[in-house]
Amino acid sequence: MTARIDIGRDHQSGQTIGIDLAELLATRLLVQGNSGSGKSHLLRRLLEECAGAVQQIVIDPEGDFVTLADAFGHVVIDAAAYSPREIEALALRVRQHRASVVLALDELEVEQQIRCAALFLTALFDAPREHWYPALVVVDEAQMFAPAAAGEMNDEVRRLTLSAMTNLMCRGRKRGLAGIVATQRLAKLAKNVAAEASNFLMGRTFLDIDMQRAADLLGMDRRQAERIRDLQRGQFLGLGPAISRRPVAVNVGAVRTAGRAGGQGLIPLPEAAEGAMEALLTERLAEAAAAAPQPARRPAPPPVPKASVEERIALAPELPALVPTAEPAPPAPPAPPAPPAPPVPAASGASGDLEGVVRELGLAEGATFRPAAALFRDFAVLCRQRGIPSAHVDLARFRRLFAFSISGLDCIDEASCSAIAAAADGIEEDLLAPYLAILIAAHMGRPMPGEEELGRLYGSASPSRVRRLLDHLERLGRIVVREEFGGERTITVPAIPAAA
Image (cartoon, rainbow, N blue to C red; front, side, top):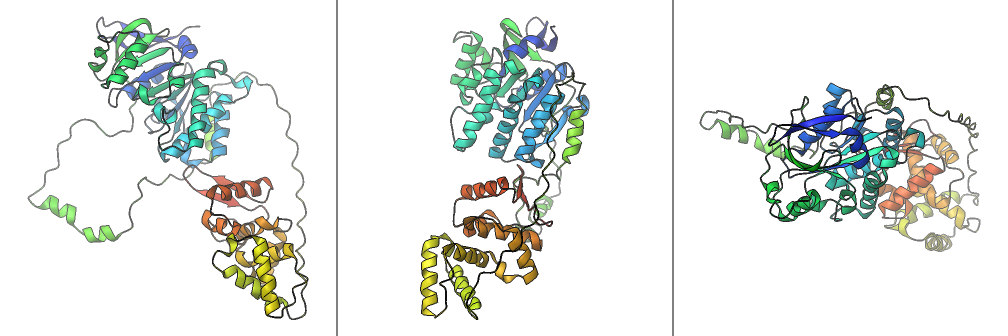
């Protein structure tokens, strides 16, 4: 089946220029043009013309395409409201239900946008074979997600996003994914990504290196490349099996929806009496300067209930019957709570002194970053100096006493202390102090300790080690961590009902 969509008119003859949708799904598309050349307008025209004929998945870093939801029923996924795992789960459901969606990334910082898009694209690519339905995947500002040079991006994030974009453009066809990438400059886009497109729409550009690369892709010589500099806004040179076998100049047609960008037209300046404008600028200026600075980005909106987005995705056109999956195994019954840990045996009248020595060691600057063996040696020396019996305390028991002290467990009431100690039973000594701090915060209804505090209790100044600690505790089933791309982290402790 072939379906040809109208994108505009030939600049010279006025004939309709279309794109063969079936051919586009097999050969992919690259759109290039300087800022203001009309790339977003072209993408919007293409999406509007084929809406309803094929599934559409839009990676939208600026939030320009969310208005498609009003006219064409696209589901808007606000990335800032979901955790990485939820983003991956949503991507799988998008493929399963063939829903047209817009992944809005505008509420995230740049590196978070890149990581989120990479996770989403990878999950689309890794969907089960029975969900390999045809879909257009539109990536605006593709130079962000497939950069030719590393720049200031984290190496791990760059590898993740380059892998996702390369899979989309190189191997996505067999999975039904047809990539449409738009970039401001070809020189900024990774060559492995750009080289896989067989269709091109080149807009206005001025740099010689970009004009020459665009001309090479269009099969034009150096003199003809000058045409690219003279293109008007909304005018593109098109070439490819889905467009035309010879370069054609396309004036992109009108669209029915509009982006959320500010107006580009001239607006009359406000009129004000002499001195009134200066008064507006300087009135109560000292108070405004003393107030707390406004955040650079507007705060993320309240999270949309995941169920509502999933329901909207499920309302996509009916799917063919899927292969039934096996029923999940019933969850294992929860283990009975462990009995409270028995107190450390001590000589009569000496337990308080032992706790005092341990507390003194814990209060010393940098104590948590010292090796446990060195701390235990100092503990034994102090006990001998003060005549406190300590022969019954070995290294393992000392590490638990030390963890109890630095976590603040010995500063809360006895009933709470017993409950928290019971919940921490079985945890390794090196993980005990940060885990106790999490338990105390959950039990007392306090905010969870941050990465810096957890690192101090863990004896490490490395944020990555702290994140690995949390991952390990989560794998043990001791905590549940929910990280949102907006930067928030929520930790839930199953053993204690209250959580921060």
